[in-house]
Amino acid sequence: MKLSTQEKKELDKFTKFLALKSTQVIVQSRLGEKVTTACKPHTTGTDWFNLNITDLPDVLAEAKKVLNGEVLSSRLPLCVEISLRTVDGDHMVLESWCLSLLPEQCDATARIVNTVYNRMGILLKSLVSVTRVTPAYKLSRRQGPDSYVMCYRIYMDEPQLHCLGEGFKQVRIGQICTPIGTLQLSVSYRTKMTISPTQVGRDNSILVKSDHFNTNLSPRNKRYDIK
Image 1 (cartoon, rainbow, N blue to C red):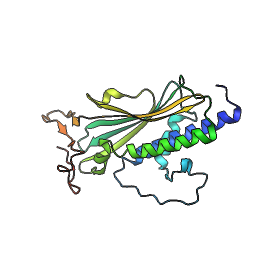
Image 2: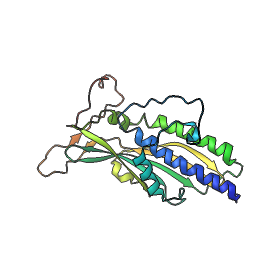
Image 3: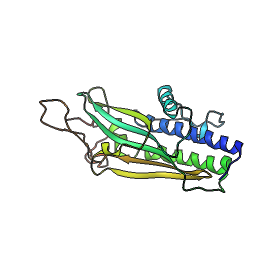
Image 4: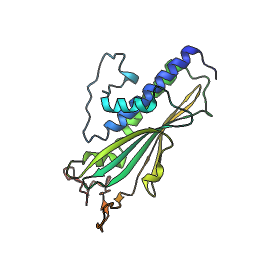
């Protein structure tokens, strides 16, 4: 569909901030801290999609560098990769979050300012929820300098799903039909939490406890150990 200059400008702006806010939601959910945000009765121009999310400067700078002043490409999606690094230097990719644009699916009737913008806000709220139910969230809550830390990487390319090992799962968080294509947000995450040792002379693999959803085996005050 051919959009007016103003409509194209608005859609590009909304898509850009959707991408920037998505990276903030994903990375901040892996900091290992509970987030409590006070409600703001009066929003400002910086409160995109009616979400009070304070941007982390380093994450914002990295996301802007990857986007390089452009909006999402119909060829290359924006990916946020979450990984775990142990004190011994072993590394394991846990998740790959992907925001992509599918040009073959369009909705010519979607209004940019009202419909598309409001749906982007709903999609971000769904993302906030989903980031806290995948296994990596509970692992992030147990990280520490004496065991392991969580890392992130932002890039524009096809997601590197082979790094997730066998049996990884894929979940589509949601999609938004726009006049130029469908924005789709999804996540692929690891299910087997075993790290192969990288140092010579080590015989045992490292097993990250994966009893994420068994309350009997995961007391609230118990710490995850890297063995």
